[in-house]
Image (cartoon, rainbow, N blue to C red):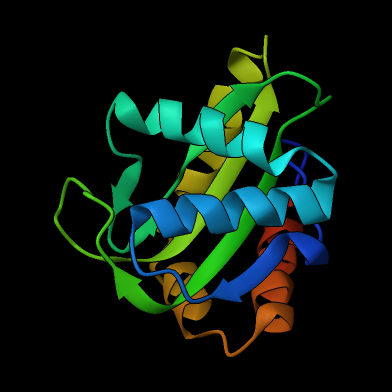
Length: 154
């Protein structure tokens, strides 16, 4: 569990070898499918559709692909760390090494925006950002997310 704004779990965190934006979106879609029992193809379509509106490359090596999709009850998150940074058309031009995927219920307005803001705050914290980028494995990534959530809840 992450915090009250969105939920994640150990199965929704992975280190992957993706070489481009399409590969990142495919990897996130599959991770969502495996961890949250949603349809990977549906997730991919919604993430790709959102990406056509403008890059979700947040900057500083982070992307936050997100979409509102039918069939889920509350915002859920998946995180991938890339083995090698790659281009994601981010506004700052920097390659991405962390991608937080966010899926929210189709009709969620404020909840989706609050979850995006929570992820944004998380990755703007220099110590958290560096720790996530330096994490050696999925277990360490998840532990960092959990520790940050616990700290922020206190």
